[in-house]
Image (cartoon, rainbow, N blue to C red; front, side, top):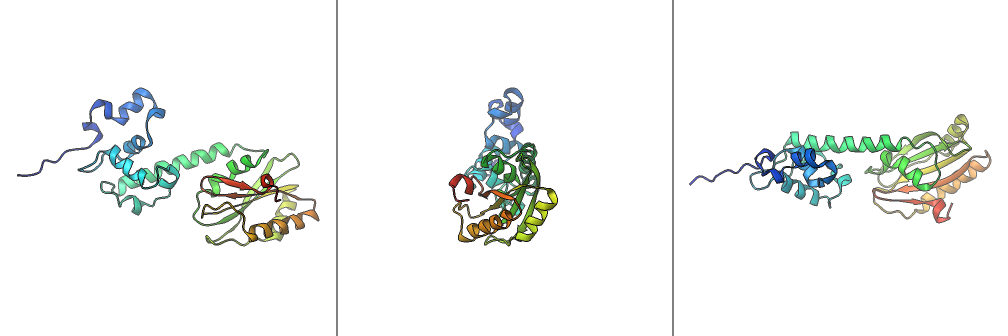
Amino acid sequence: MQEKVVSFSIKNWADDDKPREKLVQKGRSVLSDAELVAILIGSGNRKESAVELSKRILASVNHNLNELGKLSIAQLMQFKGIGEAKAVSIAAALEVGRRRRGEDVGKISKISSSKDGFELLYPLMGELEHEEFWIVYLNNSNKVIHKSQLSKGGITGTLVDVRLVMKQALELGAVGIILAHNHPSGAMKPSAADKHITRKLQKAGEALDIKVLDHLILTQHNYMSFADKGIL
């Protein structure tokens, strides 16, 4: 006897289980992450509905959308029912969300706390799988003049050119700088090298009346501030 194939396309679900209709009728905020992903993929596989498949995909990244956004097309396609087109839809949607957040925090023009610095830089480096070192240049009102990537390296570390930092600060007319780098490992404890480069930049800045206001270490979910910890 031939096995009956059951369609798990969203259009064949009961009305109460259709996330598209739920979004239209009740608003996007009431949908779960799995329901939103289900709308993107449209259908599941022979054994799972789109929502069930989406729940399984999310469970593989501990229900963390930031982690989901890091999965490659090939990794997404490892799930049965996710072909290239669906994988691309998921990746594109999460990238749009990441860029939207970047535009929101791009409005930050003045740094009043370490949290402001974190919000400004997180979209640029918080989710990277390699380490980068950035400098934020400020005027005497702590307004952001410029931010730039100073170096990019492997997970083990980066190289920092002190002369280049101070040269750019003088050219921009900056009186203060904030140092920042990310730890892809998730560890927020500063290394001996982190402390050394901070002291080195502080010493160079003293002679030029350019103050190192903070050094931030960013991870995927949090940050550590040298200034807040009193180790600057």
